[in-house]
Image (cartoon, rainbow over the protein chains, first blue to last red):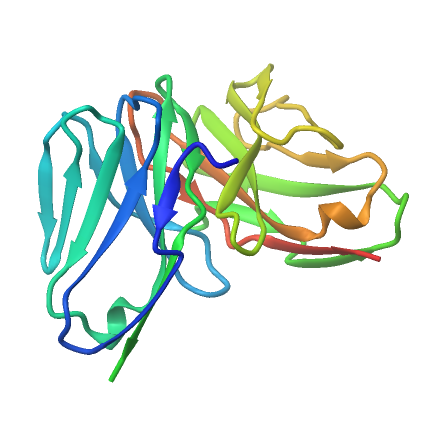
Length: 110
Length: 113
């Protein structure tokens, strides 16, 4: 059983559509991170959210940390083929022990 | 810019064999960790280290050993390989401090037959 549950696990949409990916847990996390992974590569950090209710934007990507610090979401506006990849949420247990969700594999079709 | 370097990139083992996956970082990071990635499972933490001489278990430590004699290196040892250990293994490092970015190597794809 994963401590962090991501949904959906797979998502395939057309270019220009909007989407939201969810990361949920029954546990409280001191902070959450979102990573993106390309085939054959290690994950790369997109964002860290620390404060409950925090919202961060990275161009067309919007990240939100739940008020209770048990969940997070990633919203992509006007998705592009370059957004295709595996998106992983990760939470800190303590200051530096980092655990991951199972990932959302996103495919944006031209 | 080397960052985190893992060797080998690919390895095939027979059941019962032992081997060591190497991980080295040149960023002077105190924190290092090992993950395995299986389809549909994301990354699961195997072992981690908060500094030279200090290691601790993660979510799935059974069948793996680690040691940290230097800041730069954090090898992962498989004592007696099993088919269930077929996976992609990632090493990561991060600086000290709260909620810092983890930098990952490119992974080692291990197949146990």
